[in-house]
View 1 (tube, rainbow, N blue to C red):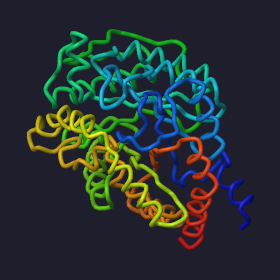
View 2: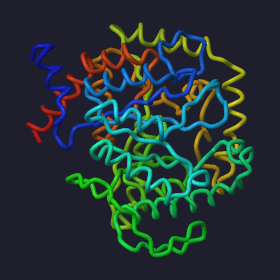
View 3: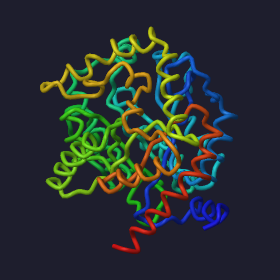
View 4: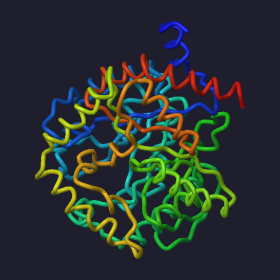
Length: 378
């Protein structure tokens, strides 16, 4: 297959339903995706991100995830608010689905449900949310909002998702919960009627036992921090068991920081340079802030509970997924993750514009070739 033919196949909007999906981290906060003094050709402003979204859309990405930050933390001195930024990117693109990260406790779910409906209509049915239970205590307490214990934050998240889904799919919705009380409420208009999509997609992540149970029982997608094969398989098994018990299906996304170069040696050298030039005070500050995230759980399992200093340089453990090497090596590794249950990769880069183009040109066509071959022999 020629390079042009491969690219045409890879970037087509009507990929097969079982094909891997791809999302990218929207750099709507400053500092890039690694906390390191290595050069990162990226920008947190709108014009850069508008152009990046269009580049991603043309190179096989179906989703983008806008980050949520309120306090200047972990090297991100500047931040754009996630829902408004997501709406702007939706209006600048034609096919890309944009996922806005949101915090229960800082949003009322009914107000958010209405906002997402409007964004959904303005974009032709492409709005989505990533519900983040919250790990940075400062963001809540400095706003004067209560900071709940770990498992209570996940109980609130479960109700938050129930309200979103209920208001998007039901008339005269009622929920009398411990955190939210909705009385006989109907939102009009409803979300856009998209074939195969009952409502705007709900993403959710978290490594703890409580998070995995919440994902299986309530979310449409479970986002995992970076994991090796065994680490992801363990999460997939547990979340799937919760979903099966609740009579549901959940799809799985995995975070990964991608470094693709002409040789594995060159790619590994880039990783070595990232680590060597790490902003140690910022990484240590983040480690101090998130130490409580895992330790606050009853069983000591949680986000970043076993992360090393090197892991935390990419703040969602993206190096652990090991998408590092030649295009062929990375494509093979991605498909191996698919065999273990990954449906979507959430990707970050040093140089977003250039490396997203490289992904569409050099990596995605190889992924699609492997998938097509496996489908033929299945």
